[in-house]
Image (cartoon, rainbow, N blue to C red; front, side, top):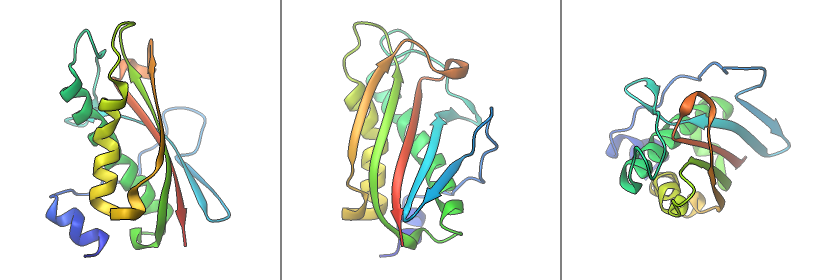
Length: 152
């Protein structure tokens, strides 16, 4: 099954390339690697605000991480010249989770992204990963995720 068939099956429409909110690029390619800048989780087109352990629970955070992954896929689609079939491997995901000092389920929140990448790309979507709890993320977002992919 193609990546696009899988996206259709999952009822995912890829978003347009987002305009950066500051002085950076949405992605940079060097050799066969594409580095995607951090994407904030969004809900209903707006930044998904909140802190895990205070305003949001793990399942809500997982949904936010999935939403960020969909935006990352939109950027990756653009970075591949409109052809996600060029993705050879999702190499690494780094997730920042806006969380209270006693919240310890950042890894479970980040599964929202990792699981979607696995659904879309199969074995090519399995990746190395880091998940961090942080005191704050720009604009009060609950989750920010960046990604590195290898393309052919």
